[in-house]
Image 1 (cartoon, rainbow, N blue to C red):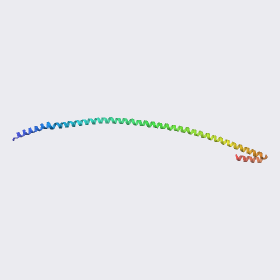
Image 2: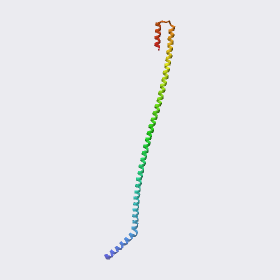
Image 3: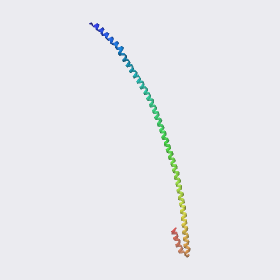
Image 4: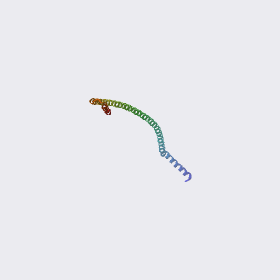
Amino acid sequence: MSINATLIAQLIVFLILVWFTMKFIWPPIVKALDERAQKIADGLSAADKAKSELSAANKRVEEQLSAARNDSAQRLADAERLAQSMVEEAKTRAAEEGAKIVAAAKAEAEQESIKAREALREQVAALAVKGAEAILRKEVNAGVHADLLNRLKAEL
């Protein structure tokens, strides 16, 4: 065989191989590549969509956290104001109660003082009567009277 016949035979075999590849092998490969490209494109669009959703979710979370912080700060301020008012109210009530107790103690001390004065007056009167009785029983003598008056002073 000559070189030309070999070249023609190889050309025919090559063309059959190209035709067979283009007819049966190339379409599934192109189809697989197209499907893969579509999957990659879908994945990229899904990633972009997820990224935008994540950004929106982060923004919503930040807004909610900010609102929660503001709410907790407001509640804390309200609680502090309530506690302050309760403390002031308790101080006022304690001061009023203390004033009542002091007034009651003063009144009681005044009554005790009055009772003690009355008891002292009664004792002085009794001693005066005793002294007068002793003076009247004895005879009128200046020395004896002075002695009785000194004893009376000592008893007072």
